[in-house]
Length: 238
Image 1 (tube, one colour):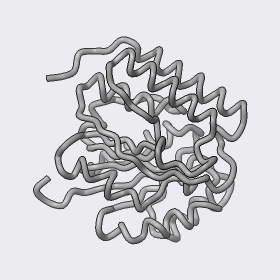
Image 2: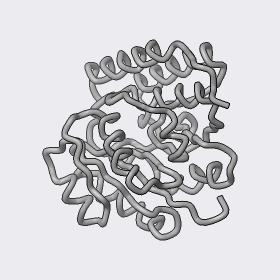
Image 3: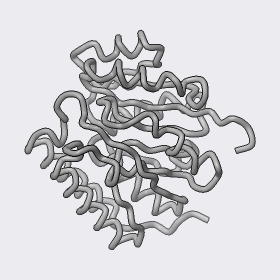
Image 4: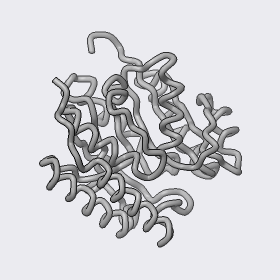
């Protein structure tokens, strides 16, 4: 990119009033140097998540239908009015480390790829990446490798992508299948993809997915169902 790109950070958030203030504070140094906008999508919170985000200067959107994908799709709908060059996704629970933003964005800004996945597999604090999450990653990435010949190491939420390339994927999952749908569709579209190692901390508060057996089983079932739906790989566009 010859001129300074417009970069927007999207943070889906559901009842994250405990963690969100620290997340937004840690992002502050990047607001002038890297980020043009921080977009917090309140996914039906019952606490002060939206108010905290607004007070910190973030743009707040509301998506009442619960679901990680639903929140991300709401963000994309908003961004189409003034499309950015790059969109970054990260979690609101303080597990992702904002100091990894420059390394996450570097391959895109240098023109090397369209999608960068932040891989947590080497930089996770002890106990941050729970056994059920590690197993789910191993299973899903193994299926992708056998089916598409590409070796992902993680389905981590901290990721960056060229917005124009993201729009080509026509993502539609409104739940836990959003991340794996993005990674499979990127392969189907023939996009250039890389991973960079990122740090991963113990989240603030209890995980809504891997923090319970029911949540883990629901997420795992959804990911497998998404992989089944995407099993037929269209030819990459020229």
